[in-house]
Amino acid sequence: MSNSILELEVLCKNFGGVVAVSNLSLRIEKGFITSLIGPNGAGKTTIFNLVTGFLEPTSGHIRFSGRIVKHMKPHTIASIGIGRTFQNVQIFPKMSVLENIMVGRHLRSRAGILSSSVLPPFLRKEEKLIRAEAEKQLHFLDLSEFARVPAGSLPLGNQRMLEIARALALEPKLLLLDEPASGLNARETIAMGELIEKIKQMNITVLLVEHDMELVMDISDYVAVINFGKLIAEGPPVEIQENKDVIAAYLGE
Image 1 (spheres, helix red, strand yellow):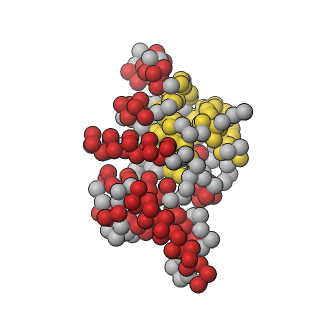
Image 2: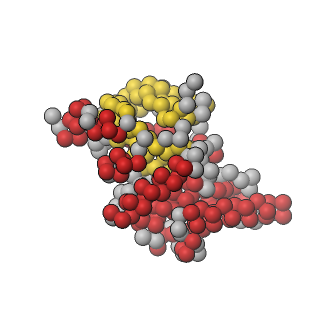
Image 3: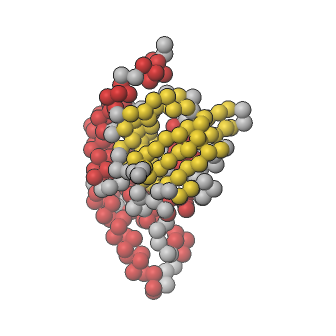
């Protein structure tokens, strides 16, 4: 019996005459940190956008916990348990750090984001629970001191942590992290790796796109390599490091 949480089946995505993803089949195992790596332009972020509903596949299927997610809207996919961050940090800069996290949690609420501004009595309790969950994530990410601070005033490292906190507020089963260490210094990168391993210990499966190969090889259970939209290798990190096709893709023949 398969232990996969996400299955990509002969997935293709074309942009006009450009093939971004070509006949890609990949299984992401529950409880693993799986890294998706490849040279710039290989199609990694396109795959993330397909999985999370920001793009429609040209052909093929995407299954999450056995359920086909093709044609679902991004907010629906998020509500069924797929959280994500973005290569370029996506936050609400004028809202407080706490409010940013609460936005993520509202996807799981009956109130929704819009109606929460004027709550009837029967939803006030739910709003308190949303705030409590957001504060819990602030504490987990060591952001409590910034709770009332406008999110746009945070340093980049903290903004990336905030994005992860907002995604965790969804209580995802699968978390997609798109270059979470981009722009971070060495100390912040180490902290990011430790955080990702803590997330795994919370029984959340992680799919990671990252260019920092030292980080990838340190924390990954499994690595999949794509080039020109095609899967060229997959396996444990030690095998990938020695794979001739992978070395050629990164360094040239």
